[in-house]
Image 1 (cartoon, rainbow, N blue to C red):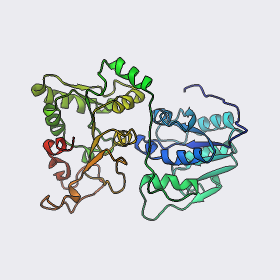
Image 2: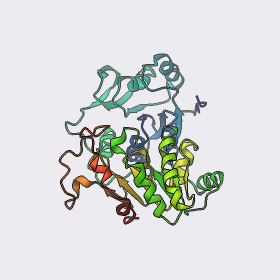
Image 3: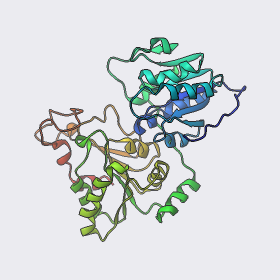
Image 4: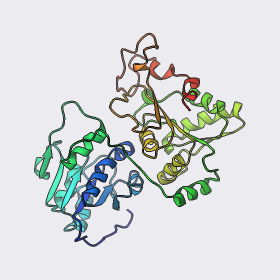
Length: 343
């Protein structure tokens, strides 16, 4: 666990603790909420899992980030109680962004007087201010921003910011030119029904006149290596996989300095949008009506809403990990040329 910054209570501003979601894309979607809270005078500390914490360090309105030593699954009551004791008395309000019971435990154990979150997982007694979950889930920015108690979220778009120094350092560590490359993010942890085929990524990479960096986690290294192998045969080794070889902070900085980012519906898609990078977002089993890249620099490809595509995709969006019909037409039928035309 990274040492906690036991900063003294700020008596000039109300101190608030944000319990962050565990996915990168969701973390990005919380930025408008944090911007609203900061603008009305709250000093923000974010409690986040280590693989999400770098996203919050790219939000200027966040004063402090506490990395939680929690793993996926399990209550881990002892660890939560230990951190609760360390932060007790520091905060007036806690905003609990995930809907799970365990995410609401720490603010309760820390005796934070005002604890805000949505109903969920029998945690009525853990929260003091509870919002009803909407019957039809709104876009994620609006879902999180409603915890502020304010309204008018339609124009809110996530924003992330890295310093020129951070970006230059990341480029130097990888020996890369400034804005002289494209970034591909070919992974999607949810499942293959959200992943544009590797052969299509490879064909696109081979057709470009600049190097291509493949970014992702170590779990996606095999996928990225396949794309490198397929593309470099025709592209003079201009495609390089850094999957699992960078920190998340470095990966975000590399996206920030890229010419454009091509991705599936994934956390890095939302990062590129929040950084204002030119991007093409490819959707298959999921829907851009719910989780679009919120940026004027984004182009979305989704065959479901393409009137010229025949026969129509009545099965989309299915939100399944693997295509139930076995054809994954929603992704296989998006050509590399069609993506390149949007760059």
